[in-house]
Image 1 (cartoon, rainbow, N blue to C red):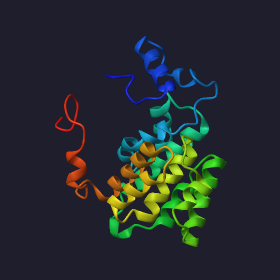
Image 2 (image 1 turned 135 degrees about the horizontal axis):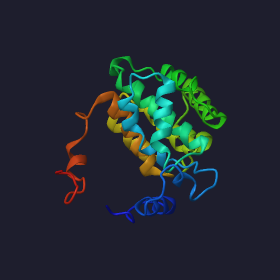
Image 3 (image 1 turned 180 degrees about the vertical axis):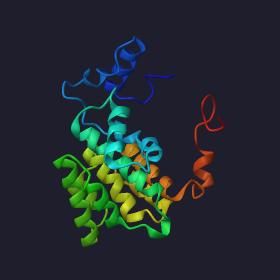
Length: 216
């Protein structure tokens, strides 16, 4: 693997420790004693949401905790990833014609476990009711590396534009801030809802190729 490519400093440290035989149950506190509240766990959690799409929230939450243990143990990071996984699970069992943003928000809000993430979800609900523009993201929920911010930004793109997948991803990336993570999470959500047939050929053709690239 290429550990120095595109990863943050904390991720480098964790991967190096794991490669040297460190116990994965402790590496989540190597960089920060309380754990990272960053969005990296939420960014990679979509497969867990898909795998546990029919599971009860408590079972899904445990699966999320287990998946993040080596890197993210802070309650905000875990809750942000759980909300993302729950939204992916919801999307995976929902017909696109039945897409209901407020129903999704209610489902994830009632199982969220931290006040900071719950506050972001409540802001999203209010923004939808008021018909806020995308400027709402930066002003009220944020677009940074905190899990609560990035997850909320990706959810806003999905809630507003989830019926048009390409626009959803483009809008998510256009929010600025931690664009790659926000775009990845928005893409996971529309992918769970719509599958992959909507993806433009021009996007696919531009994916990096070579070792472990597009062809593989």
